[in-house]
Amino acid sequence: MTALRRKRSTAPTLSVEKSFATAGHRYVAGCDEVGRGALAGPVSVGIVVVDLGAPSPLRGVRDSKLLPPSEREALVPRIRRWSVASAVGHASAAEIDALGLMSALRAAGGRAWASVLDTVTPDVVILDGNHDWLSARSQGVLYGTDDGACAPVEQVDLAGCTAPVHTRIKADLTCLSVAAASVLAKVERDALMVSLAADHPEFGWDVNKGYATEGHRAAIDAAGPSAYHRRTWRLGSLDRPGAARMESGG
Image 1 (cartoon, rainbow, N blue to C red):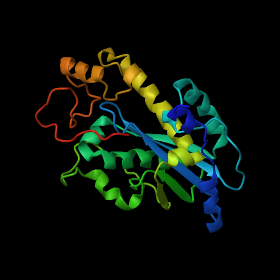
Image 2 (image 1 turned 180 degrees about the vertical axis):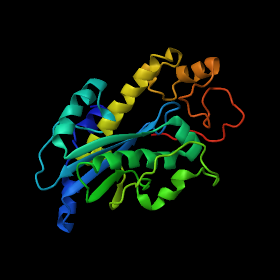
Image 3 (image 1 turned 45 degrees about the horizontal axis):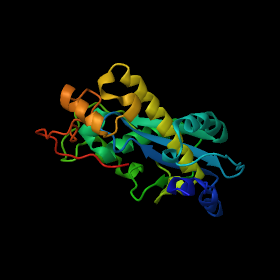
């Protein structure tokens, strides 16, 4: 049995989400990001809110990286119907360059959070990973670059996430709400990259979705970066002056 099949054999559940009911919480949000390690395109953050007062099963959901595209796309309408509220927020490559990756993630998460609040206010959030980049308490860095200078891009005034955030490593493998959020974010971001590929076919975004494949780097060497590339990162196979930051995996 392959490693992939072993991972797929254990489906995420609502066990972690239900553990918050003992503290009187009813609406629990799962949150995950995609696009962190790409060379082009946005970082995207998905949020899915479940009602612990009326939990229901949802079969077939896994961390988005473990599902083929056709299965992810088929799950989207089912996740939307199953959840109390759901949303995906994006932060552009220009924002990543101007603000730094963590602050850009916070911007994308804040946009998703604001959309969810139109329907329901979650009591608590489960965030995949070990670092809380979502909470509003550190929102101030959203408007400055890593060296303290003002960001050269206009920002929307976002309240950010005000609910308690609980980080959990590999939550996308164990928590159903987080896995569902990863699926929504992955499908929406992939569709965006495919649409951008129509105007920039040389980069192969319809296939690589902006990630650092050998072919993508070679295309950047040949054509130069586009407006959708993260220009502060090492993009092509050739070193460029001023490319101080490296991309992070994820």
